[in-house]
Image 1 (cartoon, rainbow over the protein chains, first blue to last red):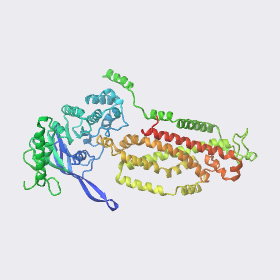
Image 2: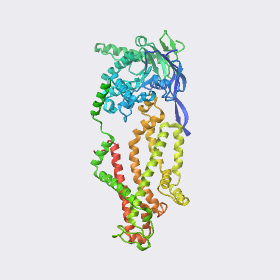
Image 3: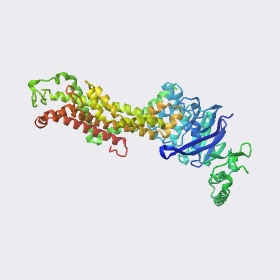
Amino acid sequence: MGFLKVEDLKVHFPIKGGLFGRTLDYVRAVDGVSFTLEKGKTYGLVGESGSGKSTTGRAIIGLNHVTSGKVYFEDKEITGETKAKSDFRKDIQMIFQDPYSSLNPKKRVIDLVAEPIRNFEKLTRKEERIRVQELLELVGLNPESILKYPHEFSGGQRQRIGIARAIALKPKLIIADEPVSALDVSVQAQVLNFMKEIQDELDLTYLFISHDLGVIKHMCDHIGIMYKGRYVEEGSAKEIFENPQHIYTKRLVAAIPDIDPRKREEMKQFRAEVNTEYEQSYNDYFNEEGLAYGLKPISDTHLVALPEKG
Amino acid sequence: MEANTTNVEIKTKEVIKSPSGFSVVGRELIKDKLALISLIFLIGITAFVYGTALFLDQDEIVRVDLFSIYEPPGEEFILGTDYGGRDVFGQLIIGTRNSLSIAILVTLMTGIIGILYGLISGYFGGHVDNIMMRILDFFLILPFTMIVIAFVAIVPKYGVWTFSLIMTAFLWMQIARLVRSKALAEKELDYIQAARTLGTTNFKIMFRHLLPNVSSIIIVTMTLNLAANIGLESGLSFLGFGFPESTPSLGTLLSYARNPQTLEYRWWIWVPASLMILLLMLAVNNVGTALRRAVDARQRRG
């Protein structure tokens, strides 16, 4: 079995209403998602807003209640584990999207970064301080700033504090939930390259959640495309970007901007073509409810959601 | 390594700190002269009352002396005597101490219970919240005054502690609801979720993450509650359901004014106590509003 295996994961949120708050219906945020992660690789989860990619990540780490399905980490089931001191908590960490709200504003950097260390390891004050300073140095922050508060840092620096905190316990898997979408572009590249560097250094596996295809292309080995809580296509980065099979993926890939101005007209026409194709063949690719069909393999690694008739 | 860390330690001490909570409050008080005077007055009166009360014997003061009934203020009795010939000044000092002690005790105890209750209810949410809030609703609908009156009738002898406890039993709900609503909003923020992924226990999240972030509103509310609680004891004693005359408080002194003779001709018995209540409540309120402004950056003056 794989390093992290997700089987038919479903996360449904009840819609309450009517008399006595009855459950009227469910929002199917994640509706049957399966995938496997290989150790040391980066797996990208892509989709538009509300496609369930963040919910998938949060359900794996136990922040969202799992309706059905199973999550295995190193062959051990971790579905719905809520205990604070579970073993896997040390091995799976998360980087949050918003570097402003994900750091407690009342705590100093040393307390923020040392929090996981204090939860799982017994270190003296001095050892702890040295560890925190090493971590800060690793993420490219001044080790002397351990007594500062988060609001004294810029967005990019705050995200680095978040990363330092996530790697403090030397985890095996990091779930990065849009780690750079709140940062400006110049800082994005910095943080991404840095994440790649520590991946090699610490032998990390990333589950990289993003809506930015450029970022995904830069980071990921394998990619899963989500739409309305379901997978529409899964494959290696090369397969997805060079040979997209599903019309939704085609449209996404066509939307990646090209920096060459001489190709502007060409790209515009190409996009228009893809868009007409999308509108014409929408019914062939999605069922009556507008949801994707089940995945069908078209090569060893490449899976596409195609209807039964083919 | 050794030399390296000490070097870092020296340097970190030089780092300029962001304005701490205390300096923000300090600046606010300097800008708001009324609040500053109020605070000095409060500290002064508290120190004076608690200090002087140490040298006064309560039993001596409340002993009836038939030879000096209704003495006007003079050399022997600075503020005269009441209908039992008891020294009003001594009663005022002891009474202020008792009233202040009750107000502070009630505020602290309601604060602790309310914070615990609100934090648990707000943090866990869902069914826990639902059940705890229904219990709280039950306490809210209890007729407070009636139960206190019944309590006075049942318990023959009671003092500062018992009185504070019975008041606390009916006054913790407001702060519990406030803390709960704040905790409900705050726990949805990413840093609480992050703490959970870092393996922090619920207990630690509640007290190390949630509590510091709702503390400012708690401090402000508790200060303003303190003002209200001074009045509460006086009100009940005035109605005759507070302390007996053997335990002087601001309320018992005030209740002598129910006698029309005293109200009209013997001002020295009730005016000092009334002034004391008025000044204390105003002063605490002034400090409380200054604190409230200090907490909200948009309202700050300093």
